[in-house]
Image 1 (cartoon, one colour):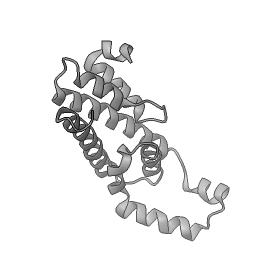
Image 2: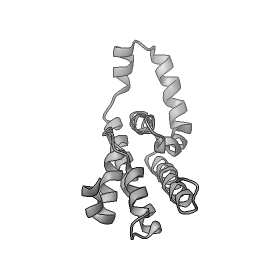
Image 3: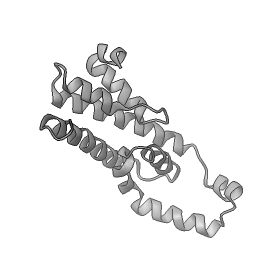
Image 4: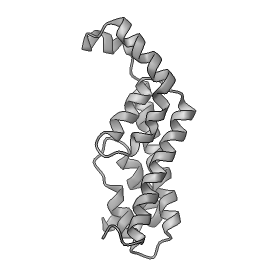
Amino acid sequence: MEFWLEYGYWGLFIVSFLAATILPFSSESILVAMIFGDFDPVLLVVYASIGNWLGGLTSYGIGRLGKWEWVERFLKIKHKTVEKWQRKSEKYGAVFGLLTWLPIIGDPIAVALGFARTHFLMTSVYMLIGKTARYALVSYLLLHGFLL
């Protein structure tokens, strides 16, 4: 952890980016350590949020490489079912970007959103809102003595 702390805000940015991919990093632990250091909490939220958001968009991009034909072929799901889910994901999928901050399932959600080819701009906005809200909430609770 000390290695990342030496890099300050950029260390948090990198850890947050990696934590939003399939790599098992806890960006919150670095955030907490930095809050207790001489770092501006607002800048910490900004760097963590942007890093995590860009990592989530990377996972989204990886998902876009997938093809619905693979789902039909390898998972033996009927074409009509695939079309039904594809229409739903086009209509409502971007909202699930709010959930990409969740531990364990957030990264697969980002990949799935890319695979479903949800609207990129809307998905990006929802992802940024969700990820920023998480870091802001953790920082707020910690600074006000709720997470000690």
